[in-house]
Image 1: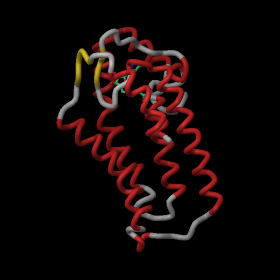
Image 2: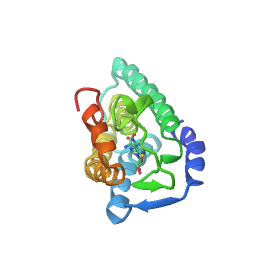
Image 3: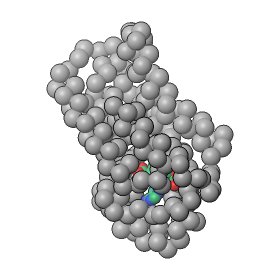
Image 4: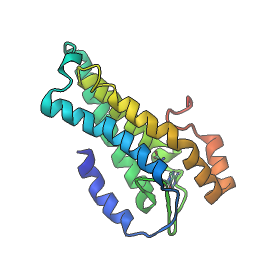
Length: 179
Ligand code: SAH
């Protein structure tokens, strides 16, 4: 569902040319870590039941919480793509006519899409009763998040100056009023 949700906004934003990009080998590695933890490891677990040795018994209450976290994640992805519009990129890019979005879910926190990924990773822990495949998403996305966030904010400060600095003063990164 996440992939389907992304198809249309992805096609739309790709029509807007990139005017500056901070992509490179480092970004490539960070995206690879996230894809491995959130995509490949759970897919391998579901397809081949590997690593079976790390299984633990299902706790139904945790599974229901996991479904709730995944639904919240999908809602956030829908909202963030609507609010970001043509400004969205899978990596660190600034597009032609890039505007700073500070309204909608971007009025609550500066990185609501990454908040969505944290929820997706949390849902993976709750839904996969396996000590390896479950936490893999938290590790993989954690590597992307902490490896990227400082550079993304520095890029936005260079592009938007005081407008972004004011926005930083008003908002938290991921959890409103907390972090
Ligand atoms: N970190 C944001 C966006 C992730 S998509 C979030 O978690 O919601 C990454 C791209 O979004 C970056 O290339 C950057 O150019 C752009 N971006 C990040 N914050 C933005 C904002 N407030 N307004 C417009 N573009 C933004």
